[in-house]
Image (cartoon, rainbow over all chains, first blue to last red; front, side):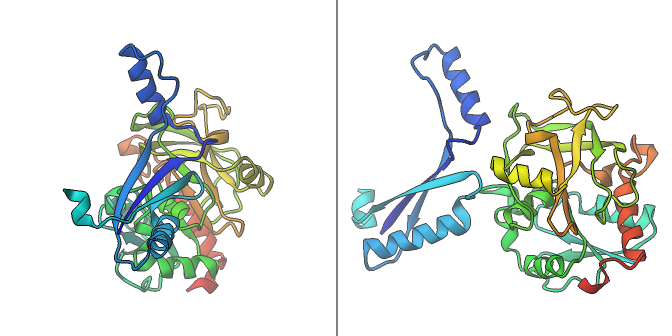
Length: 88
Length: 237
């Protein structure tokens, strides 16, 4: 099963990289882009019998390693199709 | 007395720290590989600067799981003096031995320059030989030194006098211009509540001899020698 983990800085935390990217977009003429927040994206291939179990493993991995709870939060999506089906 | 310098894959200031305590101060020192589980009977532990485990994911995020960190934690919890320099500071934050986290520098650039750092507290094992308010000229070299913690955590740090070093002007004034990376309250270094664990972004080990521009950093290591020789922190071994 595949878990997608999106790690982003908490809203209260200043994001210097996102700000720089937003400034670059503005200089390219994308004035409609109001703000950019940069984060991290992980794909975890997990051997688990159920989506709930896969989610539990992904959440534990995120709590322990993938995200730093002081500055970041995360969101998990579970893709229940097989890896083979996904790669086609 | 003996210093242990922990070596992670990617540490690159380990030899500078070793040189400062061994050759400049004439103390016993040993490198301790991150896969070790003992600290070689050291009185003081240094987590040096560098890019432990490539700093992949986040600075210090993977290093905190190195086998030696369990022993560093035990040593710290027993009251032993632990100094985290730059990447070592980041490892201490990720390990939860110090509060808060590091963000990318406010200006996004890797900052490599001499800065002025004021000693705010002298009752730690790494500032005991300093004067209160002493301003040290020490280099920084980091991309992620923008110290952040929730406002209530920062308030607690200030109230408990846990801010040990602050970026200032040469005259010791706390100004926005003197802050190289955007750290909240110009924080350059802090200690835990028990005051035996200290982390700082500037590199005192790179400022221990006048021949390389400044010897102000030596006070940090002399403080450790003074503290340990006075019998403080003996229980941790």
